[in-house]
Length: 318
Image (tube, rainbow, N blue to C red; front, side, top):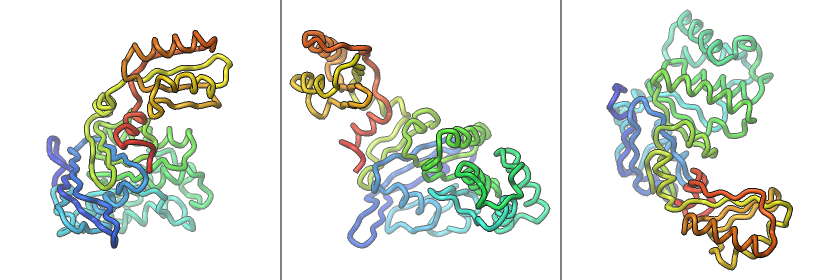
């Protein structure tokens, strides 16, 4: 088993998994170099959690090969489990136990001695800002505290690979910031991470590479910047002064394809896919001015990862 620089922490090839007549994965190829933070994105039902469960040896693929930290996940699941940490969509904690007992339990199950587990639990509690509450029952923790404790538990046995399945789902903005501060520290320390998330700005800001999964296949891979470039067009943002955005949308809709125009009436903001670049901006500005519709701001920009994601998956998450 290895995680040295330049080698692959995850190497999946042609992975297929079906549940009855539903084919969740249809030949997935995925590589995660050691020491990198890689995001796996996709619409609901794309197969992300199924792939994560296969990588974590909780499921076995129907066909294809999966190597995790140099081991065949199907042939040697226990060897894989000894080298990975998993933080699922829901905190896997015993709410009837204090925080430090949860950490000790995971450490002991992973083979740590009692004294080593106690020291490791204390170190992680301090590292994740949980030391003042570590003796309290987990049922008294906030959502953010539970998430940090769950992450600490997944690190008790110093895994070479950390798999994070939507770790910030349901957290308030402050708790998300706290959790990402902890993840950035792990990344700086060289921990390899595979992340699934519904918050694409997290993938944009923090990851080294992004893989987009749709209908059970990886349809795009690269850095966030490369995927945004693949969207192929820039975006025009229009912020109206006071007018009804629906009126402006009808006006612009005569010149812009419906799929290229997004309207947020509450904020009076229109987003236009700029197939003609600056030409789209000038056309929009001229139309609005001729109609006497006031514009507070108008700008041409590169697409966000959210917009690139929607372009790659051909519409809103299915």
